[in-house]
Image (cartoon, rainbow, N blue to C red):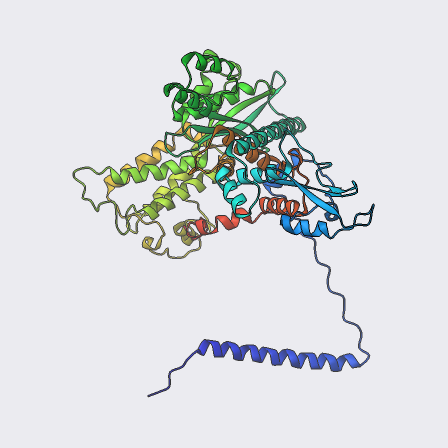
Length: 598
């Protein structure tokens, strides 16, 4: 019986490495022998050409608002450590007083939540150290406790996370009302910073349009193309909180945002107390008259929050001397209709400047996939259950490809005409439904570099391969093809194509929503205060970056070296040109819209 071969590939690899090592050793010996003679020095290496990358969209956006500042030196920053009180007492007892040169010093600790201050005093009356001097306290909020609450709010864990952390670290405990007081102070500071950042952003947008030529103006106000989208804290139509934001298309800066809330927990608590008989109706009315900071600013269904936020944002645009001319939405026209019905149907800017609706090309392509999936579910009585599914049928993979081809066709014909955009889209439909017996490539691109394999082969004088080798190949009945074409016709009308000619997407709004709900997770309960904090923090991070929107200074917290390094790393990640490419690598791997791949 022959001996089995084991690890053949590994042995070949080791032999190849050994051969390469022997070749390198022989070269070194020859170079050493040649170096002993009077040989001329080797020529200098050629200069490396400097490659300056084009700044990313995040860098361009932040450069419009932020200014270059000197970074503090690492030696000027402090570092923090956690010590045991008993250990500090032992160290203090062994200290010598600089006044009497005796080791009679004692340590006295003062606690303010987790902030602990030590006062070292000798029996002679000399105060050796007092760490409470010079501490900046704002609104009775001490810095370390403020920093802890701020971090927990960013992580979205709330008081439960604070309670766990201080329990396991054996820090000084504080109650939930104290946490709410700190959180309210942090939210107020974050909202103040967000207002300042938005004001600078609006000035940057005005300067951007003022530097351009042939910019449309009405009564000295610039016409700004904006994207708007709303998002909810809970999925479905039962959310108590919603957020809507307006983003400029040219500079990609957030111009304004609105938070809608259906509930106020203070009012809810008082109503429950009145129902239980703890307070009377008269006491409730007296309290309600003094209740000026009610969180409920919206009364209606959860689905109507988006329209209410749009109306509030377009109404405030008049105060900022801006005209939001273009309204880019995701297809839901309720918000657009609500804006157009403002001021008794005259619109936010009157009849002389109506708001124009545009479509997000990503959502238009998504509607194709939604329509095709709905078509598979609505089967007639004459159709068999397996009519739409199976090989060379309308499967989910085929629908994903068709949706992607629809989206790329829209992007290819941006800035052209509605008829050209429609022809490009319909060419993908007829290309995918072509067969060897019935090729339909008259609308596909012509030439040797065409994405259509059939027209490219004809241009090169070659015989086209079979249509069954295409990624998307239909073998459906004519009646089924007509139903699919009806969906294409509905999405490629002149009105729809004219709304897509600008090629605008709502990716920036979706990006902002992901930032907001990372801070305020959807699977956790929240309050209006936490949603306000999440929206303000996300807006600041989006417009100016993490370092510029750091709340430490406003909260009375001294920056540390580790804090600055973390914020700088977050900014580098935000500015990385490869971040989006790596994120979409796996999504686009099987959906390449390249020559020969379609």
